[in-house]
Structures are given as structure tokens and as C-alpha cells.
Amino acid sequence: MNKNYEIIDSFEKLPSPAYVCEEELLEKNLKLLKRVQDETGVKILLALKGFAMYSTFDLCKKYLKGCCASGLHEALLAKEEFGKEVHTYSPAFKDEEIDEIISISNHLVFNSFNQLKRYKDKAFKKVSLGVRLNPEYSSV
Image (cartoon, rainbow, N blue to C red; front, side, top):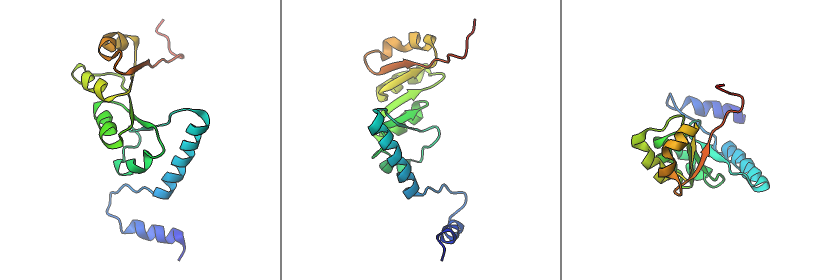
């Protein structure tokens, strides 16, 4: 039987809705990303906003340096389930969550200089800090 037909037949047996991930293809892509990291010195992070299938984390963490989180809950998922670097960025951080986000993040990116001013005293010396800039935007 043709492999494509076997795959289609397998899909028909799955409950619906379902998320399906072909591990061989995922690992092939992860190996490519690892090669890019090794040859360039960059860190490639798993963006949890786009892919938070934690059942694949054991495989992904063999190849990637950590995760990029967009808030407290993704940062917790990254810390608890991925167990490597956690980089957190959010357009707006909540005052009641910032201390916990700082405690579980390795790197924190603010959306504005006002955010940086607001939280720098809490975050300074605990995590590396960054500010997101948009060079194509000017309020002047």
C-alpha cells in the first residue's frame, strides 16, 4: 500500500478535532535549526504563541535553547515543561504578575521605554533586559 494512503487511513481513525504532529518531520526541522545555531552562534527559541504542543517539548529541547513567552502563563509553561531559557515579551505587563514573570524569566523585553522605566528597578540584576523598537514608527 502507498504510504500516502496509509497516512490518510490513519487520519480517518483519529478522534476529531485533533492536533497531529509528524515527529520525523519535526525532528528534521529541529536538526536544521540546531545547525543554524551551531554555525552562527544565534539562539533559536520556541515561540509558544505559535506552537505550545508540550507533548513535543522533550524532542524540541534537544535542539533549541529555550522558549519565547508572551506572558505569565506561557512563561510558566516554558519554565516547568521545557526547562531551559525563558525569554518573555508582552505589549503590556500586569503589575500583579511582573514579579513572578521576572522570577521565572532569563530575559525580559519591554514594549516601550515607559515600561522599562516602570519595572527596571524590580528586574535589574535579576534578568537581562531589552526594549522592542519599531524604527518605522514615529509619534513626532
